[in-house]
Image 1: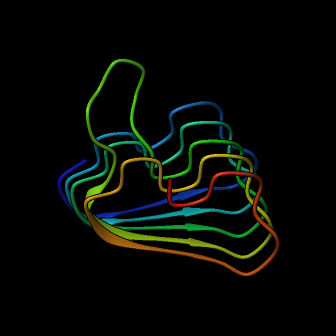
Image 2 (image 1 turned 180 degrees about the vertical axis):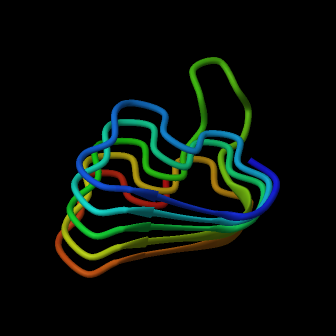
Length: 101
């Protein structure tokens, strides 16, 4: 996604908005593992909780997020921000192990 606004009314699966370049995505429920993986720009707002590797790297990749903002109103799983280079991640609840590793 490079621009615009998308609202997902419900839960989102694995790798939602992975590689996103711009725009604004609102997920009204929970988001699966790999949400915002390798995100490059824009804003993703998860109004529930997020799984593991939020804003992290995809398997075999040397880096995670390089831009954009990920906001989670609930909690997030392990490896939040794994190999993050730029951008921001805010989680209102608790996070799993190895955050920002």
